Image 1 (tube, rainbow, N blue to C red):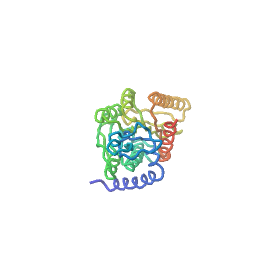
Image 2: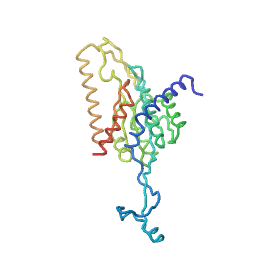
Image 3: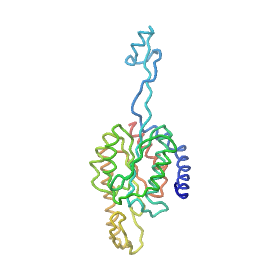
Image 4: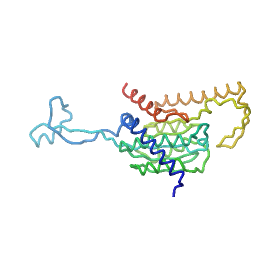
Length: 293
């Protein structure tokens, strides 16, 4: 039995998410994520302008008239949500922790997927694979996925992106659309990213907090790494400290963007407190422009 406060959060998230999907995302999602290919649908009589290569010669011979094959796009996709549930995701300087942002983004993607009759699956990971929900269709299934993202208590605290990516490679032999939702505060994940991107349509979704870009001048502050427990006192008003911090994080962001570009991965970058529906819409439009060029 789910706690009442969790049920309330899930219902609120469903209402806001479904509105965003119906108003903004569903059509964009459909246009940029293609199905598995073209499937035979029916035959019809030949019309001037039809290509000779699509003539169905067996039917033509039986009917003593030219008939052509008609194909339709196989739309159904499998969408896998790979969601980071490590301890660093619980940080939040706004009214939402990064874990809540991840749940909202995952919900928007999942409802967009089922609006297009696609299947949705979930892999929760920290420094290990924590939980897996096999892909299915339907509203009840998506609500279960969202519930687990919001309420799951992981055993691990660290972040190993390779764990989730490697597991996806092992269980999913057919091509899927995989959204990797994380703050990407991890190392040595390039090989796994490269392997998965060869088989699947992989979309990294990078979630950050405003304090991880530039922290405010708060004087002496005790910081604790939620994944390791290491503690450090920092003078946030010191311009030298602030400058080193800003340069270091900018370097991390630049390296990550270069990696995504090298692997030809379309990615999304989000900050806590941002309008996530608009951010996803911008991503879909940019991807559509790239695919059309």
